[in-house]
Length: 122
Image (tube, rainbow, N blue to C red; front, side, top):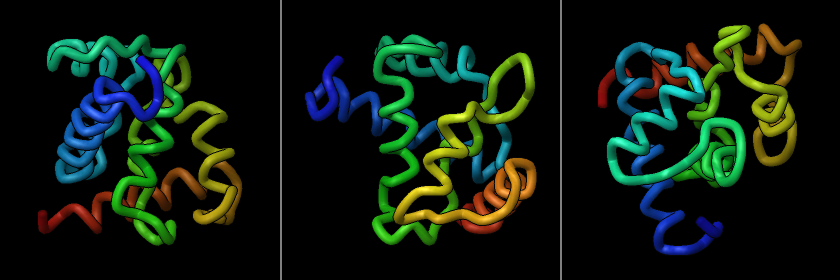
């Protein structure tokens, strides 16, 4: 699956749908493996820790968020071992256009709260 291909865009749309649904349910987190399984159920083969997964997560956070003011959907995706996002999430959150402040824990909790608030009425 190549970024920009029809297959990639379809997987991205599916991922955004899954993550927005979880945001509506109070920013419910999902492990990488479970997200991969949900995507597979919808016909998209995305391995949990390789290939297009990091690119899809980055693009899901950017979807409809060009100025970076909305919550980052990728904050909902966590590692099984820690129950927290991977280092890639924190790198994304600190760069333009997002520029999220705080230590990792503060940043992540703030994103979860933002997502829950922004999606509560949708």
